[in-house]
Length: 151
Image (cartoon, rainbow, N blue to C red; front, side):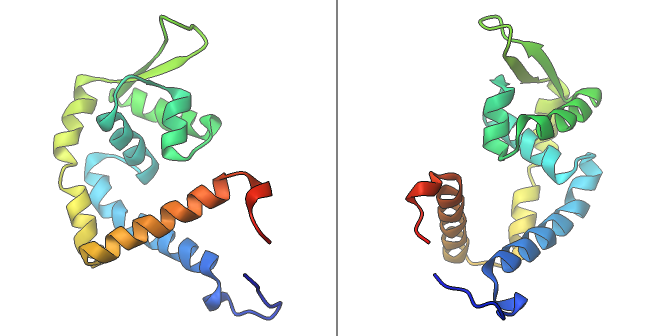
């Protein structure tokens, strides 16, 4: 893959991804505000709705956030009474995140969000699947071993 020094920003795939991510975050805002959630908080809650009682490192990896970035998100959710953070009984160094009853109940209130976003984005199911596949490939490639990348 080559790039020229004079390449236009509109031709840069990374700028397209950046612009898309910002537009998606803006579109989520009115859907999440009634729930009292920001997009990062929503991601954390979705992960916990899929798998409750995970340690902070596992949650950070699932959210693609480093633990230090995740901590303030968890603190805000805990202050709202949606989750609790506690030490693992197996390993006191591990911080385990568990949903409260209010956190589990919020799932019902947020059930409409994924479909509402899909309607806004306007992709056909095959386009959505292709987009997820391309995004996963990019993440896997960039998060993988840098010595295995060409360039």
